[in-house]
Image (cartoon, rainbow, N blue to C red; front, top):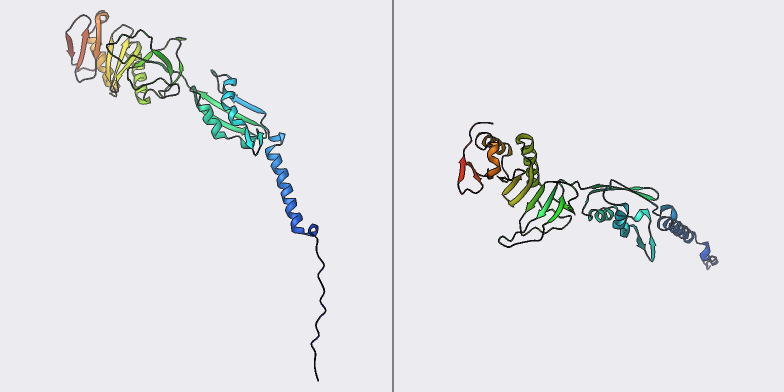
Length: 288
């Protein structure tokens, strides 16, 4: 007896059309949502920059500040230009503003959905710095270039004799007047400012000019016409005490019109009168 294995009849599966593919529709839906989201991010007027608030500027005009940051406010996305707040780079805006010599500090905050808040701090003038002629022996009729100086030793704008200030000069060949450049060591500047303040308060000496003769020496010119030579750095309180004793005991007020200089750079004090080759030496020991 022969047994035959019966096969199940083959049935062809019905073909599914592409438009019936759920994964395809899900992908299209995701891409569509991403496109709408991308449009809203890149090109929607909702996030287009409209409001720029600038505060803290007293010398600089708003137009000057806007001109400095304008190149950073527009971005190219593919082939389109946009001023979308999402793509405004705070760090680049800050660097652009700090390139302006008078600007010392910048703080930038975005105000959603369409504004930015810019707070700046301008440099405050503390003295006037002038570049003296460093070529000794050569006549120079050209007036020195002068600039306002801040406490960090940075020159930031030309001095046009608009107001009275004490003058700080130096004769180094290495110093080139470039706005925004640090021209004097801040520690040296702080020493000079403190010395001028204390000589006025404690000795009633008004200083009209300070000349940085070298990295280790500064010459203070008083309004009486004579100078004080001082070492940088030095114990300022000690040096002013020695100066006070000398002025009280040896160099009376009636003698000062003929005084040329007092040199405090050494353990002994040297001083000289005009039209005299003799240099006097003093060793004040008592406290003023």
